[in-house]
Length: 510
Ligand code: FAD
Ligand code: SF4
Image 1 (cartoon, rainbow, N blue to C red):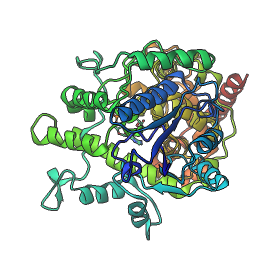
Image 2 (cartoon, protein in one colour):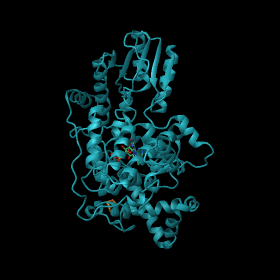
Image 3 (cartoon, protein in one colour):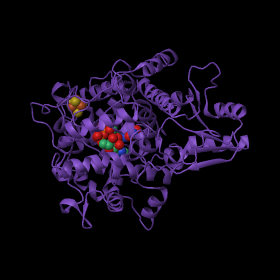
Image 4 (cartoon, helix red, strand yellow):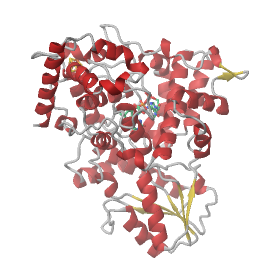
């Protein structure tokens, strides 16, 4: 045997560089389901099923093409449970001369494979991941000479480089960003009528994986009762088409809006298939741009959607690889509280958290504003240790992979990186949630109140956060209005808020 071509669960891309020189006569694809990937954090059952079933479907597709695949199933008697030991086993029976893989999507996984290949005395050929629109070299070029990283500048460079929504060297519509037209809330009647997203009933392969996961990880969070994620490239394309036809036109307007028992609204549900590399972001971007050019979706919606992918997604990946391994340990605000227990079961009287966590446990999904301005906001205001928050987000979302999850959680949401990712902490009181959703109307708390028996814990903790971090926030121009408002409170109000915030923290620690 010549090369062992190692494919991880988030590398399910037939066009990847790992296959460039593949010769079925001399090479073998190696894939392994290992328990350590589901236990290093307390992984949601739906995330485990998504990865393993998508891997099994991919392996079937390769075999159908005549590509030899050596596949280690989770429930195989000989499975040693870790990548390192599994690779050692494979190397001893396949005896390859070299290992080829696309660079891993997690720093520690990459380091482990490098160390294991070295200990096995095998050369490891790591190829760049062509899935992304920006290479590491592109991002390094973008960083050069910059004191501050801001997504908007990276986004513009990528628009020009890939000629997305460009005309005669200028952005289509004369502006780079149409955000001021986006981000509306729903009227009292709730979201306009919209079709449910296309979903995919578990086939025989998925059902088999579900059985294994239920038997092997019965105590893990989440449920499989509603499992319906796309798990192949064909399904991913159907999902994309469904989004473009039925939801893209309203994406911009309602991308920040939330509504009880409406998990999907006008979102695409495409993160999981892009992150597993089943779907190329170029294909997604081209389909969205085509919808604008053919008149079926407005520019503000299309530009807003494309910015999430070219801008945010590309930018967080660049930040992850540039700042790791130190990034994961950052805790600029010195937050030390434990994560409240209700994050794992949704049992809280706070209606917004109950709904967002409830759907997370049911589907392994919450949309961006639920992640940032409900679950993320609460842990930031409460002062939870960012590493505990990171472990929760890495565990509970089907699309969670460290390169994308960590900068979003530790950086954007918890401000643990002190501003590398976002120029200010994303903080708000319960009134923001009231404006963007119907959660507060069904809640026992009042978002306008910061003290008293029915004070909204978000609102109490918001003012308390401003007080705790006032010296730091005063230095930040973008926070000046919030700090000025704080200074309008009387000393008596401030003391009462501090006491109530302390009581909330004590209660949640008990
Ligand atoms: P849509 O709302 O339809 O957006 C379209 C696409 O844009 C997404 O599929 C995604 O690929 C991309 N996108 C949008 N926002 C971001 C962003 N901030 N960073 C990167 N890509 C973005 N996304 C993940 O893919 N995996 C994660 O583990 C993850 N963890 C997050 C943790 C926190 C605390 C926060 C605030 C955000 C996180 N995100 C993560 C980003 C975002 O919330 C999800 O990408 C999005 O909710 C996925 O749903 P969707 O596909 O329906 O997205
Ligand atoms: Fe959430 Fe506060 Fe609104 Fe209740 S009142 S739903 S806790 S923001």
